[in-house]
Image 1 (tube, rainbow, N blue to C red):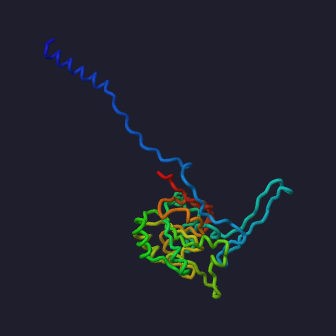
Image 2: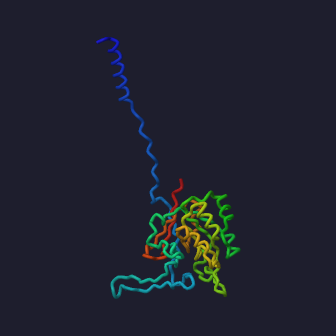
Length: 269
């Protein structure tokens, strides 16, 4: 063999051996998200009691023993409750005939990132307060733009009135209700410009109590979204960062459902 060719082949073989023996660094594993067991969980549900606030004209909440330990050797109650009583969510067919009903809401629409707009100070001075577009923009100036796909929750402080139905409903001598809520314009702005998919509140309605046109509700339902009302525990979650999980019943043809609503917060880094 020609000496030059031999030397070239030998050098090439050596390079192959060196390459094969070189230890390649392993790729850095992606960080795993913390398990749900490490997340904080907050209950945003008001208790169901016989004397809780009920929207005027809605069915009363009833509890009746159905089976007893003494007679049946087990215990259950029969309950009767309106779909929009206690902490609950409503669906577009509440006001729009032929719109989506309770059983049509997929599970992923009941797991929603939340923004909480705290209006307790203003609402304390004006029980008929309506959140305006300017109020939304002022909130965003402090907390950032409302992310698309969020539920916008109005924290009025009415959650603390739950045990006093008269104060919670604010029913006056002329049978007019009084509590704070969203203006229709604010909801339309958040739907069209921010892409929210749901509304929430700690009162008995996202509209101000004295709004008999239900402008905020229609703005949300016209967008095929859902509404959660009579929330509790809003003092436990921040303006941004929580994820709402709303339980409830997929009632065929129903306009919503009483619900157990939880808020999840990831562990602090």
